[in-house]
Length: 113
Ligand code: SF4
Ligand code: SF4
Image (cartoon, rainbow, N blue to C red; front, side, top):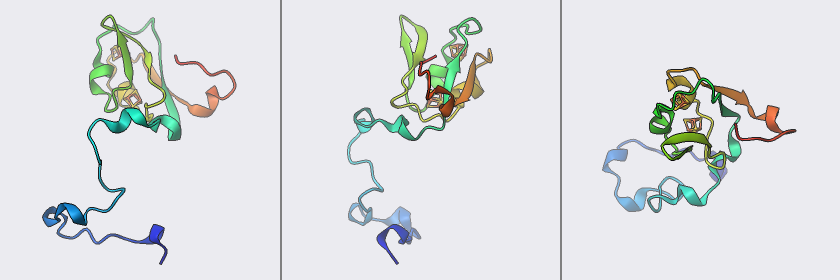
């Protein structure tokens, strides 16, 4: 069995000492996500309709990745280097102002909103 096929025995994981957690299974330092472009494997991206948006900021508070960009207390876009495309912002938006769009739709013309 190759290392990539290895299955961890996670029984009694609650009792594991720190040294039993293998590299890749831990966050080595808090707040390091900013150093990685975690949006690279996103399949869909959020697109906001500014005319529908009421600036309630729900999307900002619900985003688990701090990827909703707010300036002067208003949503202005999405941090696409870190947005993972989970769609929570779209699901929670009370104004239906956000839709998730397939990433391949943007390969030709780019754009943030
Ligand atoms: S949740 Fe929807 S209405 Fe509220 S700020 Fe975000 S996009 Fe705008
Ligand atoms: S799709 Fe997910 S990660 Fe991206 S902005 Fe919305 S809630 Fe945040």
